[in-house]
Length: 55
Image (tube, rainbow, N blue to C red; front, top):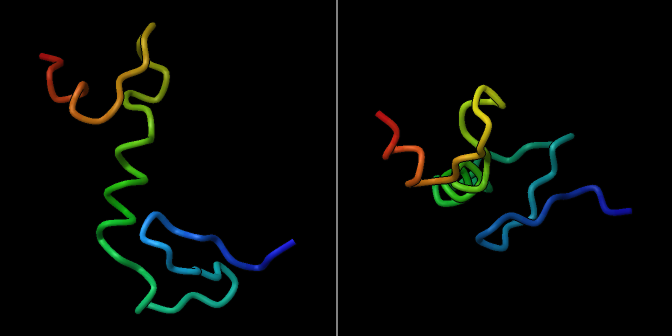
């Protein structure tokens, strides 16, 4: 088992030994895009731009 996580941009990030140079806004944005919104407060799951449409 590896000690790193390969990010969306291809960087190898080690959670036990984090390197600030490996943290890119593109990776954070991609991870947030894939995460569901509303934390199960709704009967349907919203992703990415779909959550911006909720009034």
